[in-house]
Length: 171
Image (tube, rainbow, N blue to C red):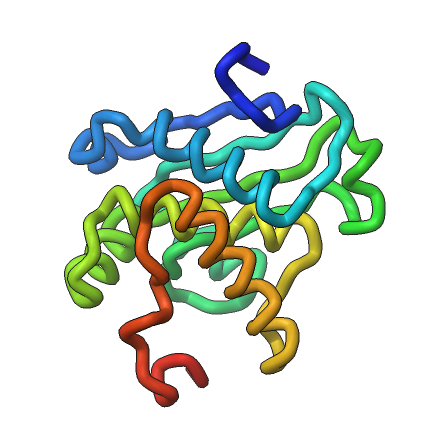
């Protein structure tokens, strides 16, 4: 962990697609979002636990989504936990968070958000998934969204759910 990082995780950010060059400070954005997720959710892991964030493209994420989730389409973020959520405190490897540039960019534009802010949100979202947070029902979605909102506020980013109507939240 570098001295200016607040979480104990050893973070590796990999640019798997040159499309992410549109976000020159992507590694710093990812690190800040990881730290904010750890702080706001009070996530616990051993010092030096490894977490990988891959900045990929739609083609790579589509292939992974098809292979692991039987969904032959891109999605904004995929998470691959290395351990069960109750094992994260002592795990050497936490898992992988993989983001699809074109989908993230398209969503940011549609929601009139900056690409950097949307990237931060999806990194926080992905990290929470690695620790067992989910949005399969209203109660768990509300708990996860509350942490996301607080983590993003810590980064100076507005509530990503504030402008969504009830129809969008249900999907």
